[in-house]
Length: 281
Image (cartoon, rainbow, N blue to C red; front, side, top):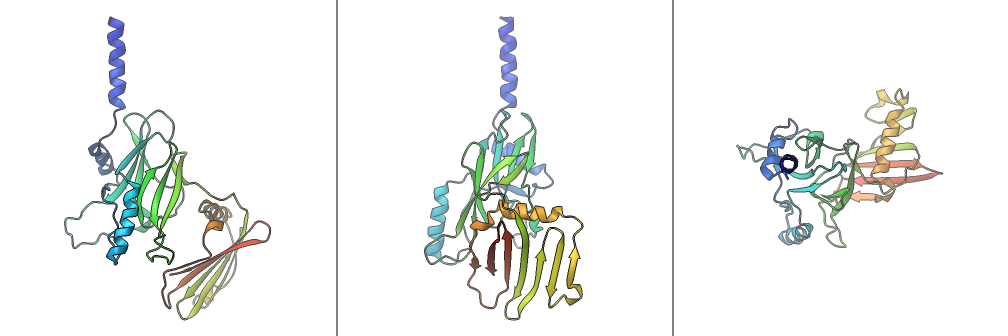
């Protein structure tokens, strides 16, 4: 009888420690974080920025079908403890006329509470410096992976309402990693071109593992060939391009703007292959 009581006591302790967090519990964790204390849990996933009411209705019906929730429970790191995928929204401001501006690399649309034990959590984010704009929401799509839904264009395409993009992620070494659709393609050279609206090309910069070449109208004093001290930076950029699946991207992106600027990137990889992406914005 005594042994039975002891066993029940231990089970009770561990059961309490591994209880599912409530919304209030999650909010307290966010409030106690210096990075997330201005955020609350997202409850409304509708788009309110589309001018056309009919378009807005159709797009919001698509979002509604995703059935986004404020948070999801999983065990991403397979340690037997509950982890939490939380959709975030900025807290309402006391002065509604005040617009809150935040550095773009600090803006968080969601966070993962990864359990270190039954009572403590790490708040983790991406393993790269990419910023995912216009995130509608995120949700779990398998025991190990989750997805985010973003707005890839604010202009409705002619073939329908294909303005959303779904991106899949996984947790690896306490970091959020985008699941690559590409092989690890060997990139030899990257050429970036900046084009002004009606004045034409502004500058072209050529990147290789050990060198940089700059040609520019507006920065002629900086033109020339430069050697690279840290060759790891080119490898990091190559890794990022592979992670986003650069060969699967469209050749041209546009917001139907006249005399707007444009960016063009040409990636040389593999055996004399190249991919050029033109972004007119």
